[in-house]
Amino acid sequence: MNYPPKHHQDYDKNHMIDVIKTYPLATVISVQNNDPFVTHLPLIYREEDGKLIGHIDIYNPQANLLKDNNPITILFSGPQCYISPSVYTTTQLPTWNYIKVHLKGTVKAIESKDALKQSLITMTEFLEQPDHKYVLEPDNPRMEGALDYIKMFEITINDWEGKFKLSQDKHPKDIRQARAELVRANQESIKEFLDRVF
Image (cartoon, rainbow, N blue to C red):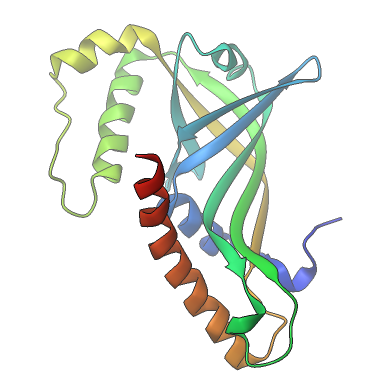
């Protein structure tokens, strides 16, 4: 059974891909002997075959599980915030709005050093959009030295679930107000948080 309710589910794969591309830092979850392994890694969606591509440090204990078509769960998180009843024009209760994408699939290790190298270049190019102020060159000596310490993997996605809880069940004006609050809160909260901790 899907939760939240149907009106908070988004079944449009293009919307989910947009979340992945805009917020590529994923929570990658593997399980071994009922023990979860969780790592946060940027994953890139490969358009030509619909797979996710990632890299992991060989010393991360989860690296040993990212192979052999092992099952995997991946979470991508979009914007989120508390919605006060004060933002609505109608009487409501407090709530929390958020965008999440939950994926399930299988993972396969890619052993080719050439594929790893090209993948690092491609990922950097994607993450440097739109300005491309930095280019990872194929002959970069630091990358060459790091190749022995990084494992590449690809994920075949078997199940897609978009959770877009954005006050869709409210009055149209309240939906717009909640959207504006999501934008405002995310812009302000990042600065306030960083001012406190860093």
